[in-house]
Amino acid sequence: MGLDWYYLVLVVPPLILSMIASSMVKSRFAAYDKVPSKKGVTGADAAKILMRANDINDVQITRVRGNLTDNYNSSDKTLNLSDSTYASTSIAAVGVAAHETGHAIQDKKSYGPLGLRHTLYPVANIGSRFGPTMAILGIIFGASAQNASLYSLCGLLTKAGIILYLCAVLFYIITLPVEFDASRRALIILRETGTLDEEELAGVRKVLWAAAMTYVASALTAIGSLLRLVLLSRRNQRRN
Image 1: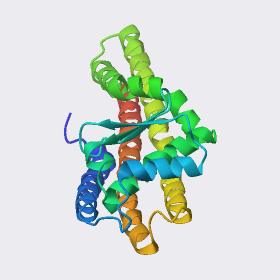
Image 2: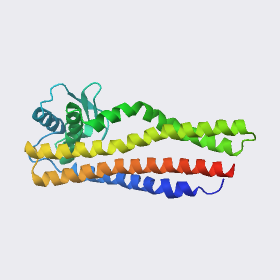
Image 3: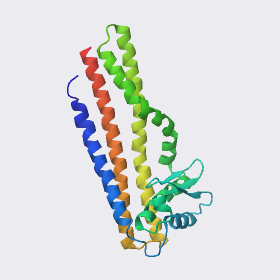
């Protein structure tokens, strides 16, 4: 099949960006994890303060294992803070907890993109797991198909895989405004409640910006992979 230039041009650069962003998140979190908040506020404390400021009374804060495994679950109304965040008084921990609380605030205010992301998740999960494999199999078997019926069947398999993966790509794209908005809300409320001062907020902003870049890199990788599948499919059609 030869060298896959589509992969080298469309997929490899975003993958490299993703590795750089991931490394940046770890390094910045490690740096600001050593800087305690001046008021001694823990990640859990920050989440409580921010939720109280937004009249959120139906969300339970729980502690989960791991490092940077923090998340907000809208289905069971839980804000799950990792071991590295829950009881830590570092600026990094407060920032991460505030970001996840930003998602709880989005949920309370019925933020549109968040609801759309939740709706897309089931099919996007299937699309990311099976879409590319289906498309590639359709392209490979289609290239060696000996009759029109088999070629047509392979074409349908390829199209189905691309459509499924398109749903996953849309999920990655919709995730971007959701994550940026959660960080924006976190920074505003941390300032308004006086939880952190301007110097501390500058550190939180650096941590959250690095985290946001991982989502940008993931979206670019997904878009590049989708374009590659489309171009490979078209090339296969021209040859046949």
